[in-house]
Length: 272
Image (tube, rainbow, N blue to C red):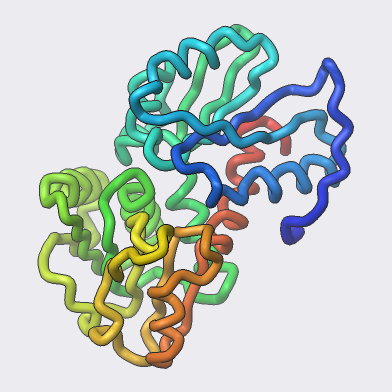
C-alpha cells in the first residue's frame, strides 16, 4: 500500500536522476512530496522537483529541458499537457487517444516517450475506495487533458454511460468522438449538466483552485447519495466537495487520484 505524503529522506548526489513536475501555476502540486517519499522508501536514486514556466515560455523551456543530461522524466500539469504531446518523440496509444501527455520518460539515448495516467489514477482511486465505476453512469465536467484522460479510463473500466461537458463545446465533442471510436460499447454524449441523471459527478476543470472561482457544477443540483469527485489538489477539499458533503454526497478528493496513479507512473519510469 502506498504511504501518505510526508518528509522524504533524500540523498541527492551527482548521480541522482532528475524528474521535473512542470506547470503554471505550480503551488497546487503534491506529486513531488509523494513521489520523493516513495522513492526514498524504495531506495531509488531520483528526485522530483517542481518547475514553473508560463505557456508563453514553453518552447524555450523545452529546449532547456532537452539539454539536461541527467533528466530522467517530466510530469506535465496545467497548462502544458496537450502541448507536450507535440514535442515528445514517441506517444503511447492511450496518450494519443486522450490528446495529452502527463508523464514523459527520458530513455538513455535521449528519446522522450509520453503517456498519460490522470485517468488511470482517477479510476484506481475509485476502485480502491470500493466505488468501481463499472456499469455506472458518470457526468464529467471538463474535457481538457485530465478530463479526456478520465473519459478514456472510465470507458476502459466499463462505465455504462458517460456525458462529457465543457465550456468549449468542440473539446467535449472531440473527447466523445475519440472515446466512442475506441470503446463503442459505452453510451457517451455531450449535453446539459443534469447531475440527477448520473451515479457519479466528476469535476476535471481547474475551477476551485483559486479563491472566488465559480462552482464548476451548481451544488444545488446535486442529489444526496451520488458520488462527487474532483481532480484539484489544492485546496485539498474544494468548495464543490464541501458543498457536496453538505448535500449528503460522498466525495473523492484529488489526492486519491494522485495516489492512484503513482504506481502506474513508477512502473512507466521503470522503478518496479
